[in-house]
Image 1 (cartoon, helix red, strand yellow):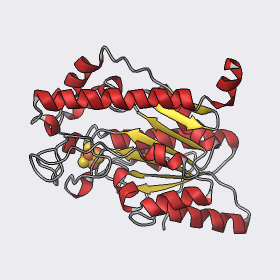
Image 2 (cartoon, protein in one colour):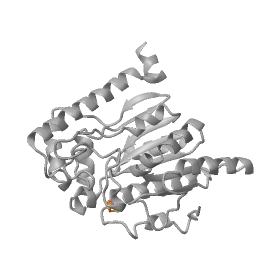
Image 3 (cartoon, protein in one colour):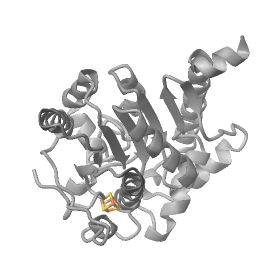
Length: 306
Ligand code: SF4
């Protein structure tokens, strides 16, 4: 495994877009994460170790332990650091495909409790190798392995995506959250929370110009619409409870959803019935988020209510 050498004068992460598509939100999110991590480390006198792999994540400059093994790689690095008396912040950035391929690795490392932060830039596909579906591909989205947007052909199943940020809290994450680079203050605060509450996991919504099929100048708008329409709720979950961090407006949802799907080629085949099914899914998903918030108020909110 190779590492990126960061110094005050040389910041290679600012130039990790050599092979990425213009406007790639994964690439932007990766740079933002690294900027925040390195700035905080500088203030604290720390020397972070950051590595990873993913389609938009600086293919040429980031270094990795191998597909689906980043989390056990982190456990190994932490063990080696402990043996040598070294304590440095450890961060891995990768994509949703890594979670699918290495779920045992991923959940096992969190259960083990190694202090590191795992960020995924979730573009809902294996974009680097031909846009195959991952477990995080949204319902009805057309990918190369699901040309009809359904599993098993035009009349096949409609699959909602997995929610790894929910699942990992029960595997030992002290902090789990969803985030978006279009909501930068929320994004920044969550990265800082993740660094202070390891092991932590943050799933970042990162559209993909190529596999989602939209103009690269529309990355920000698509990213923001994905949050505003409620298909990607922003929340965080820690010992301080579960909290929605960006509001969802059910009345505005239908209009925002139509704008969101209307800008993407992967949804060009949708019928009115499909859009209605997406609306029901979004309402259910957001009702669950509200129920989680009520069920896990955390010590501060529970105390205030009593
Ligand atoms: S294919 Fe998608 S994720 Fe990969 S670099 Fe291009 S926009 Fe980014």
